[in-house]
Amino acid sequence: LKGRVAERDARVLASATHAGLVCLGKTQMTELAFSGLGLNPVTASPPCVNDEEAVSGGSSSGAATSVAFGLAAAGIGSDTGGSVRVPSVWNDLVGLKTVAGRLSLEGVVPLCARFDTVGPLCRTVEDAGLLLAVMENGKAADLRGATLKGARLAVLKTSAFDNLRDAPRAAFQSAVERLASAGAAVQEIELKCVSDAMSLSGQLFAPEAYGTWRHLIEANPEAMYAPVRERFQSGANTSAPDFVAAWQALDRHRAEYADATAGFDALILPTCPITPPKIAAVTEDHDFFTSENLLALQNTRIGNLMGLAGLTLPTGVPSCGILFQG
Image (cartoon, rainbow, N blue to C red; front, side, top):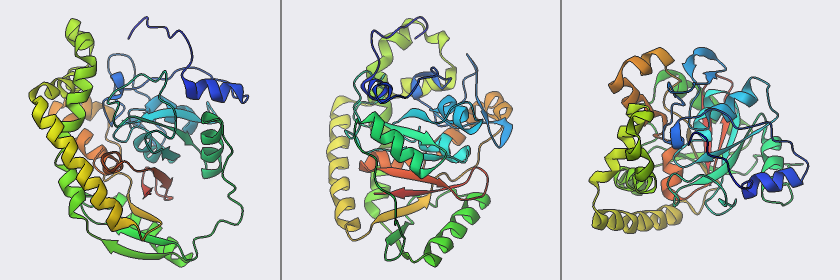
């Protein structure tokens, strides 16, 4: 998109500007927002605040690091499979994935329109509430008197604990213990509809992303970082009937999820099963880039598939977070 200049601001930015916020600029990110690592060797890869040799998470990488390094008070990012929450967790921020349709996508560069959302990346929950309010031209939630006493939380075991590494596991367990100590009722839950939905990912995300951008990608394929380009191009292998059938199946899984979780205030899970890998390692090893990218988005993608809101909070362990889905 080099040289592309928008004719007007996106709706969320225009609303924030009208409320008095000042836009400092656009930040670096993975090309067309299609990676969870935040790596972009073509231009630049913002570093993780906890390890400047590691990736910062994507795709809203520059938005997160600008906040984490103290360059901005807050950031605005998009989240299609985890692009607000992954850079937020790896940089010890609060990241909010909104429900699709909560915030306007008018003027937002699309990736997969059916999954795309916009959300804030901030230092605190209060800041996230304030930024959400100005982006939607509304009123921030009143957090005074908030308590966990009586809150009903379920630990989502299905898929969310696959490939979970030691540091995120320990951080999550510690966070759950603190939630229980604060008065929340916590129980574990298994949901087959989650694993069934996860198996549809390859038929849903890449086909829509490639269908949206193939004209630009194929006109100049060498301009895009090869692993990202290949992820887009994998979408060409899904037929139209398979794409339609996958969406029909996903709608059924969403209904099953809604029924099974109606009695809880939120489902909780580790935000990300891994911590940020080194920039050099994912740059030098194509297979490692692919495997780490899939793992980075493993847990956050559940919320996009199920059409949920998701709030990631720092646990106190660097680059390890807890995700609340509602």
